[in-house]
Image 1 (cartoon, one colour):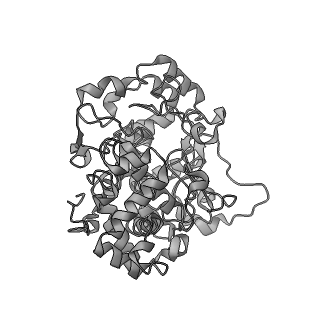
Image 2 (cartoon, rainbow, N blue to C red; image 1 turned 135 degrees about the horizontal axis):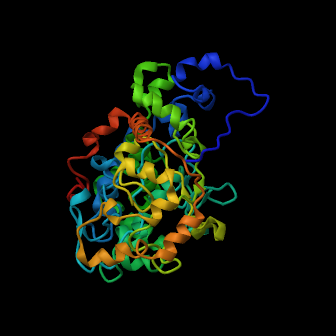
Image 3 (cartoon, one colour; image 1 turned 45 degrees about the horizontal axis):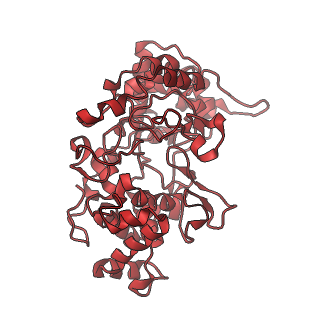
Length: 451
């Protein structure tokens, strides 16, 4: 959050009276919200109405462990409806884990760990989300033959519907997330040769399943026989499901934007004024989904194994994609929709309290220097304690994070912080608080459902 705000460009006429209902506060809020509308069907892929059969196919694939090397983990394991489309942990317990959410455990001595927090899926089916992952390594890029930039480079297959579909291709290729280790299964071994062998191996499993084969043939015009099924089809179906199931645009704030002034409580009104006014949150969390989709260094504490950068346990963030040292420690601005449901927060899940992550933004350098790892939500694993604390205990790295910070300090009272947190709760769509209906009773593979 930054103090300075671009309130309005010179010469732009704004009929403040037309937005009188948008604020009870300072008068700055109407200028920040002028013209902003709640999301509508047209803002989402397929105009918010994808094929029901495609969505259902994607739902089954999302919960089916058939897409993992050892057939023991599904997309839903780390992005579960019961955990705000995440897993409720700071860092996911991926391949080889047992259980779900905060109860999930991995075997002692597991080969790899997932080094970043599982990103929430809410509203990623909106057209404006053109860059995904914490570092933006999947992005729309018209210069590429496929229309997308991704870790696969020119090997990315054609026919992917959108960035959400591109994203869905990569967790199954990661040994730590879904593929497993080379000595454990054929998919894990195939991952050593690149993404394509993994995608082909998983598609072969789907082709061999009669139920899936029939569903793919019914959904996709270019699938006439099981042999036509590819992971591109699977990824497109998963994306259609995610875009539909995790759409969240009927929060009190949305109703407020539609003219229902009473949708917000007095505390939420005050928090809105701070968010779009003196607290400066809107400098990065702008637009209808409260994100500028850009990358910022905000001295977010790093915990866990990291990505192998610097001292070995650091994560350089956007620099890993751009190759530009000025991007070091920058991460994509997350959307704040349903933010109260999606903790722990930060690219490493460093904060398990929404108020704590808000306070971090107010004085990020001090926060990272004094960070206590007990603020995280980590599985109880004594053998991982040292790994989790590497960066926390490295004064030089903490200082580097503080030095890279781009947030200006903001002074707020405890009451104002409470009002800000109250406004963040106003971004929760009530329909997202209980998504149990998304979990299928069974999946075509016959494997246990990730529930």
